[in-house]
Image 1 (cartoon, rainbow, N blue to C red):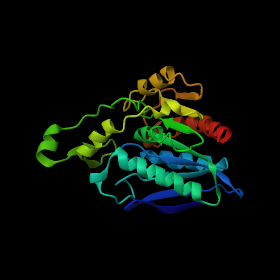
Image 2 (cartoon, rainbow, N blue to C red; image 1 turned 45 degrees about the vertical axis):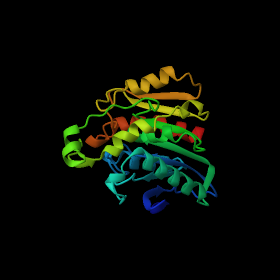
Image 3 (cartoon, one colour; image 1 turned 180 degrees about the vertical axis):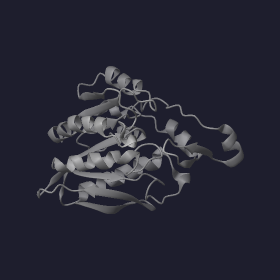
Length: 258
């Protein structure tokens, strides 16, 4: 069963799709899934939806949200930045903890791409575990991104063309908050962390994930490498072979650790 909820976050609402297992239980573990840069909960070839359904088949509630101004989230694009994303993630996490059918002590976080950065920056939440999918996990370093200063000077925003053909606007706030949200809190996180990497990712350099895995010096960090997979594990092509390879390895790990 899947339902749509709207979670209050200060002066706006965060849309959330929640997928429930068929098997009835008094309390379920739960994963909150966070999408990437200029995407949405049902974007990227339905990648997070397919992961949600796999989690539900394993007895885990899976909730995925639309971040500020994306998908069904009606908050203004002028607010698109990590500060609001972090507030929305916290609001969604606390909403799930408050649901009577969910075990408040068994809620994990999963993020793809920029969503991976969001969940690493949310490491002070009492999450059971963290999962990054091709995530921008170098949260103590600025993440260089290309933009047109000429557009900012002339228009007050820059135009971004996405790989699936959309045209999206970005305001200076987004780039400023990439710098102002830098943090080393993740290095104090003690619960399990899984870093998943598509080794053929042309969008976000896999070395971002490799460097964290190799240099974090944390015993709680594990990894899954999917050879040749791109940024969405090829989900955007609708060939789900590599995504299913990821799911087959990741979901049992989550079921064990959560």
